[in-house]
Image (tube, rainbow, N blue to C red):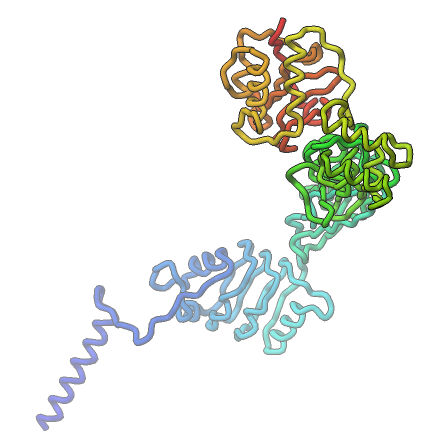
Length: 512
């Protein structure tokens, strides 16, 4: 009897301990298994469930067990909810209202035992055969009463083009592809326009290049709120120059010791579209271009034009005129080793169609510096001032020498180093400085850009910092200047057009 009483007392003690652990503040029961919190794709849904009391222990996390503890009716209307991922754990609710949100799929609700569901005024696709309609029918088959009409159209949130820039030639056609986001937006209507129909036309993304120039293709959504643009450059499809001669696939009238940069500078095509290849087909970027090399025009990843280079008097293709060249011509004249093709054409210096002693003699006179074989020489005005004439002669003698940043001669130069070298070689006393510093030289006379004379220094605005001068050159006259070009990587003579015309600020006169 006493033993039974002891067992009864122990049982009462255990029960009281459990009750105290459950209900007395500060006493808790350690779970045998810790649940991981649910990861919600939509933070608005997570917040709505927290507000509905799903976060039982108020730790800002919702576990599967906490969410399943919700019961009865859950109303989550007009909260901007887009994704129901995580709701599959709300197994205790009987009725759910999600009206006026932005929900596109109710697939997470398929495992719930719901009596009623309201998903009206959302973004569900209820077209015949659609997945959303099939999911609704699945819920209805389990006895759930579903309210799902009407539905809102999914709005457009952006538009993008497959290309933002494009290079083409007149007559080319290209097709741009526009993608509306989201991909299931209801209104996929787009409007296409071009900024200049004389350069480029567009019809539903199909482009036709009309003439050289630039134009911007613009695509806009129906409401005009979203726009995407593509910048299109329509460029000439052939190599162009007024310095050299283009004749039957050849580029002629090129002077010996012409660098790749010099040659490109004397073509009217954009630098980024020009490529020079040696006689073996390898890209050539340093040294002197030689007979038998080629220059290509590449636009839109397509080779548009190719010309074979001929350097006057360069018989062996090394870009120079030496004893090797006139020996080869003499061997041809004697009938010992005939020259063929482009090398024969380069050796016909007097352009009479035959190789003879005249061509051979002209090569020898060039080697002896008695009578140079000339290619292009700009038409420059006469200069009577001996100081300026000496200054320009020194500058012209540096043509083709490489550009090296910080260099001041005698074998390579940067822009200000080139001017410094030419001045000091003429006997002018000046210290080495940058283009920006030279532009502020107090002892030199200011000259408006439209009043430049041969020998004047020319100053170009720095594109990255318009308050500074970033480049310097020497005016030759008749619209030409000579300078050390980082773009062409050498000392070159250029016309003052394009970039040079756009950035030329003013000049300074050293001798007056």
